[in-house]
Amino acid sequence: MGIYTILRPLLFRLPPETAHDLTLKALAMTGRVIPARTPDDHILACTVLGKKFPNPIGLAAGFDKNGEIMGGVLKLGFGFTEIGTLTPLPQPGNSRPRVFRLPGHEAVINRLGFNNLGQVAAYHRLSLFRAGATRRGESAIVGVNIGANKNSDDRIADYEKGAARFAPLADYLTVNISSPNTPGLRDLQALPQVTKIVTRVRKVAPDTPILVKIAPDLDMDDALAVAQMAIEKDVDGLIVSNTTIDRQGIAGAHGGEEEGGLSGQPLFDASTAMLSEIYGLTRGRLALVGVGGIASPEQAYSKICAGADLVQLYTGLIYEGPWIIGHLRRGLAELLRRDGFENVAEATGSDHR
Image (cartoon, rainbow, N blue to C red; front, side):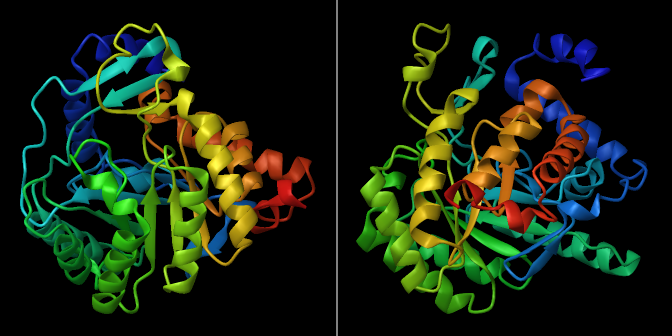
């Protein structure tokens, strides 16, 4: 953790959203002067969704909601980043306080509610970022996470709008139907609804990889049904998983009674178990992104061996600081070599072999 052992107590004295806003501003200012990232170990390179990733470790949606620090994030060493969740119209989200740290569990509860500046503003930022990266000859993989406005009269149409807008710019699109913080949103995970969404999204984004982000609280049979539908409807992959509303892992914790989605260490086992079950069904026919509780190389490796082609983190960054990505890159490369794998793809799903 290095200097973050000093910085974290100071940041944790601030309200979580205030600390997050300061972090965004710091990365926005320093992103222009951060030295170019050190080259990735070749063993970490992987090709997923038709894209060449320098390493399989990404920053999950929610950290850079509005696409304000894409360059800084990638310079830290992430193999890719995902901006959003972005809705067609700007919205403030739920009332504050709406983010709560649980340090004893290395967890966070949030009920942000898709607060963002809207898709138009993010589209312009991403356009400028793409133009700059192209000019410098840089490779930068950015996914866009799309959602529906809370007060929308037609939420399915909102996903269609987001897909149509970002398809020309995004390396992939994530259909977020699993946040617990927009009333009724998780109902869209029901098979008839999610099928309608992905059908309409695919129609307006025929050439862009599409992922669906699901909740760990889905019944396993329902999660497998979504996976089977994804195969049949030309969806490229699933992100497993979003935050959980289950509180068994934090029983009695101060702040654990707050409403919202729980992320961090208590989510690791359930999200990894769901990932493993889905890989057992899909066996490489879908790209799988493992999310939930990653804060160490061993945890990232466990997700990959369970079936993940790529992994993402967010809460681990809060507790371990920006140096976590270097630790993950080095440690994951060591684990792959230890077990005789020549690349990430060879390790993906190895628990099933």
